[in-house]
Image 1 (cartoon, rainbow, N blue to C red):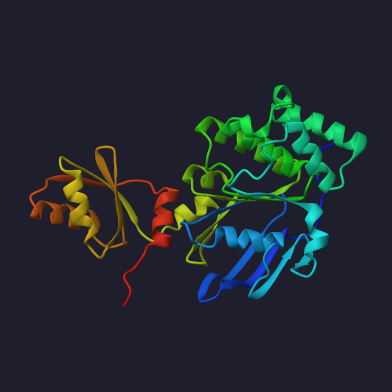
Image 2 (image 1 turned 60 degrees about the vertical axis):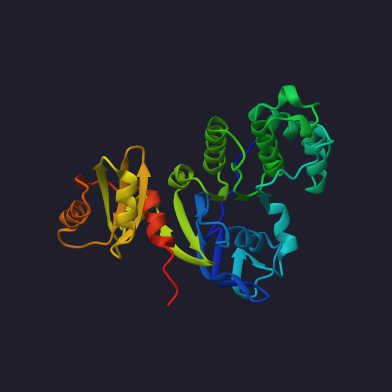
Length: 316
């Protein structure tokens, strides 16, 4: 059975002014979003930034408080029922049945999506081979390791060959090797024509996405290809080497022109606002505090972009 997804025209997801309010809390605020077909699109943001709420609206599980959203050509929430069999949704918490075997879970999910009989048997065989679940087919899902459970969850999500996958922090509870294998599987799905929207807390995962949205307090604060976002960073990244990095960090963090300072091993990584003689300025500030330091520019990374985009400023 082919795993190719039929080609389609137009963006997979288009949202305009998408908002969601829970009482007095505005969880998603006027979000504008466009996700192209067959790309891996990342959602990055702090806890409470609105990532999961947005994904649930894109699935049709939550009705927006304002704005419009179209997914695979279906207007939501009105056409959510028609959309269901064309998408796959994987939550960050393992949501299959612990007291059913791997095979029983896949059979049950297949039936829910209208995959029955010979088609179901063939598809389950394919997925067990593809995701290395063959030797665990009769094992209860509750006895699987974290990586095995993750592979089972992905298999159940793609069993009905959806055009769009919405994955909410799917690698939050697995080891680095399982994360790498999982992302290889995601790119195989994208190459076959599926579109993927993946929320993550991991910078290395975010860098792997074709394009990326950074959310903060319900708002879209950055959107683009990871390399482009790093190239457009509104600041200067610096490396500070000194004998007392903790003391230096505390001093630099108090400066209004310093957007962020973090210790990396024995040195500091500093994100500062653009400015003339910034290197000399920081070196002089530290020298004035009795700390001799080497300060030099260093290439930006995605974490710098994240810090700049989500920096918490004091309330007026």
